[in-house]
Amino acid sequence: MSSEPHYTLYHPRWYRRRVSVWWWLRKWSYARFVLRELTSVFVAFFALVYLWQLWAVAQGPAAYAQFIARLKTPLFLALNTLAFLFVLFHTITWLNLTPKAMVVRLRGTRVPDAVIIGLNYAAWLVVSGAVAFVLLRA
Amino acid sequence: MMASTSTLDLTVARYRPERESEPSFQTYEIPFRKDWVVLDALNYIKDRLDGSLSYRWSCRMGVCGSCGMKVNGTPKLTCATFLADYMPGPVRVEPLDYFPVVRDLVVDLTDFVRKLKRVKPWILREEEKPPGEGEYLQTPEQLDIYKQFSMCINCMLCYSACPIYGLEPGFIGPAAVALAQRYNMDSRDQGAAERLKILSEHDGLWQCTFVGECTKVCPKHVDPAGAIQQYKLTAATHWVKSLLLPWGAR
Image (cartoon, rainbow over all chains, first blue to last red; front, side, top):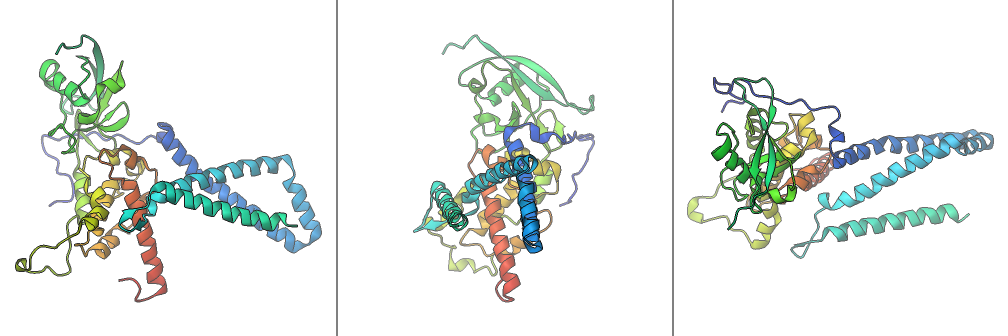
């Protein structure tokens, strides 16, 4: 079998449509997908802020106080809120997609998607609760 | 039965390579019947209004996978898409996205057929047992594990819904992965490692960024997006094993 399409007299010119750079605006589900891909930028933003915080802690109390003061500026409050919303969006869509990748079979039958999603949310709540407990204890 | 007197505008993409360099649209006024699907309307046009309209169809009952087209922008099997759901119209019928258009609503599927062959969608055995020893038996539970993926009718709606396939034409695509998975999960098959090698290549499953539209448009509920994500999990586990244990990955 030849690997390339065979052009004959009867198929002289096949029309190939180009994909527009705005393809993701055609449908809400495509736009939502692109937004979800964009969340990676905000995850990276949080990671950078965290590194900055570690650096400030290493520099001593004065640097750390300055770091805290910076975070309280309207710019950082706005950026953090935006980043938080995007990361939340990422987490929720991610958890909702888990049953697609995880197929669990118990005694021959497939565990329903809702159970897998529910267990993932439960685990998320437990971990978030543990982190909140550690942070708010003091 | 009395035919309804209302009509509907059906706008159809036309491409006649011998006289135009790109597709145009033509609108036909057709009678609206409650029990008509889009394919019935196309057949009406071909029989009564314009015999030059070209499109593919065969079984008209959602089994053959020939009549996939875009209806109002969404990939659909036209034999299972009722006009009543689009009333009062207009309805716009276009060829599937991302495949070269041969003529009007007919697209060329050579690319898919080539990709499908690459994933070896048949039962692979390390060694065939002689026919005298009988069939490879399977329990209903073993059948149930892959049955969903075996429902694929190669209608190409999933490729047409996949923007990744549009942007990266080399991508092996949703149906090919789902069909590879269909054989991987078959208890009689021993070719999973061989297919994994093919699917882990650059144009394989890692091109998929999980848009998820393939699953939404699938008329047979195959869930190709699920198949790809499960395969990614298998591939990643395999990779970790081969990294940690030299003997871990077969």
